Length: 100
Image: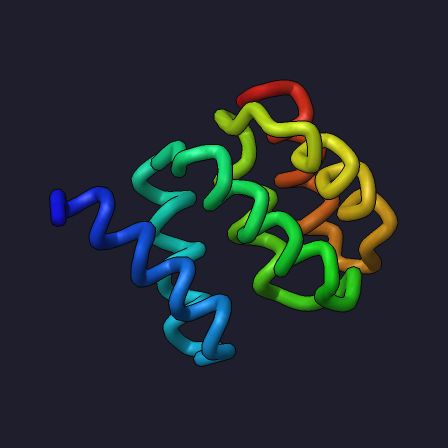
């Protein structure tokens, strides 16, 4: 497997297996490295994050990463983040909606 393929395989497996610390680390890495996963991985990440409570810290990293993603589920997810009581999540979702 190529490194990017391996990394996204780890992301997919961490979501499937529910290892919270691994999930958080992979979401953070995706955001910090500005990675754009394949479409099906984006869909899995957003589907996972959408199910989290609106104040869950994991939403922050998905919202931050989503700035460069194109997928039908991204905008609704970011809009749902605007309802969070966490101001940092609202701020990052707002920035991602503008593509920054």
